[in-house]
Image (cartoon, rainbow, N blue to C red; front, side, top):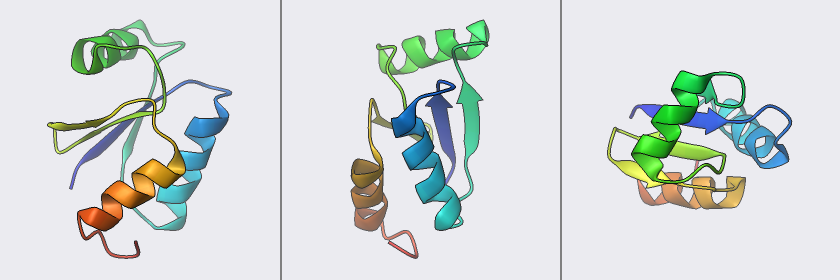
Length: 83
């Protein structure tokens, strides 16, 4: 499972999702959008919105403007170990 998480520095929801993924030892790539125009453009192109955290999972599933509870529920439904 490949996870890309788009974040903004200082976003408490981003911090919560990041902490959840790290605590469960889920590998993910973080892309900060506030200070990286390329990542910001990717976020908009992929999800059609600007809110974070937004996760792209396996290049097809989009969890836009999510929180740690939504991410945990999604990963549990997908059978990810530890959820």
